[in-house]
Image 1: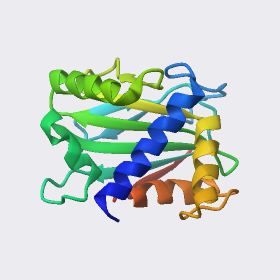
Image 2: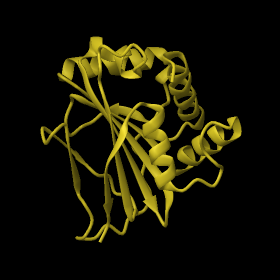
Image 3: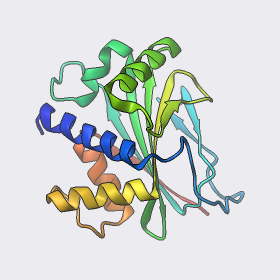
Image 4: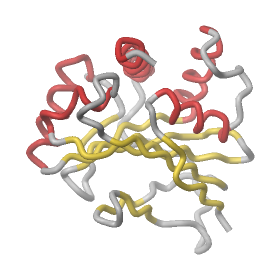
Length: 190
């Protein structure tokens, strides 16, 4: 997929988030019990992301690698900010996507702040993203259920790889594919 199309898709997602005007890091109700995963290990165990209080039964974890030699990689646009990896966590309940957290990991807190500032300048006002309070070298962009459903409908409407009734597994794989990523884990809640 060409770099221009990837940037267009990313900007469509940013616009979708901005237009919804939802609050930062809002989550759904939870019945989180002792059988659910509390945190996810990222960047080969160097980073930990504490899962939000979300009612889910399956979690899909996708990874997008940074390849500075790939001019078509969307992440290559953020090399100046020390971007190391990007992860997308798609939470599912009864096979339906109910939330997605996109996590961008930079090499330093200063670079993460600079990347955050650059994203804000690109139209990020009112978006559901911020510096992760558990680790200031991470930026998290949150898509609540309404935004995930809107994204699925938007791509289905454009005829780009999804049906309007796509389940969470299909959506997570599609999301990984459009960002040249791959599914690295599926975690079922006990």
